[in-house]
Image 1 (spheres, one colour):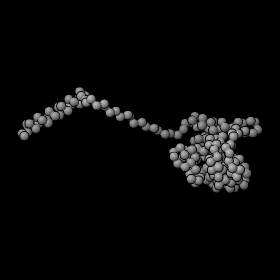
Image 2 (cartoon, helix red, strand yellow):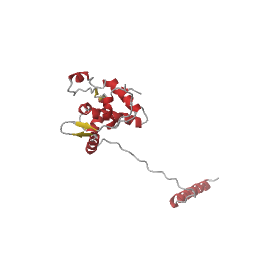
Image 3 (spheres, helix red, strand yellow):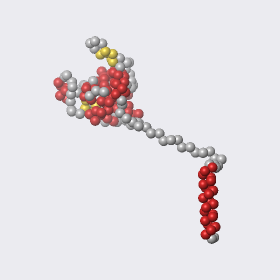
Image 4 (tube, one colour):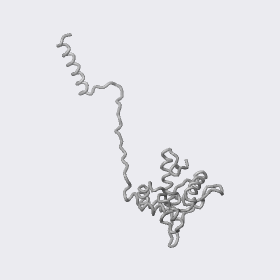
Length: 193
């Protein structure tokens, strides 16, 4: 094969390819389309979202001039020996599932962590304040590692929010449900898996 024929063949092939690309000559097979890639960006909650979430969480209570009255849901049947049952109405009102298995395990958690006491550095009871271990707060003993998350959710200082048993149990449920929804054991933060 001589050089002229090779150059002519190469130039001809290149020309046909260019013509095909320009004119869009296509085969009869359907064209494959690729969907654009979606990007999800996570960011901190806005001040309005934080306020809305705190309002939603606090909406479970009704305030009178002298006392706070909690909505009292009917509690699932749990054995009489289940520990810390006095906290179950609050726990259910802030989202904990109202079923026997979950409530029994929640009772074990609260008894294991605090013997059913709301242990916090801000307690007016000096005995409870003295039992505070400098890192775990409230009835469910929420660790300070969750400070930023809790402050975003409740829009208040961590120690103050976790000293309120209602907010403490709500935050404990948020931890539990976040892990459970991801397919994990929701009791992991308290080593009950």
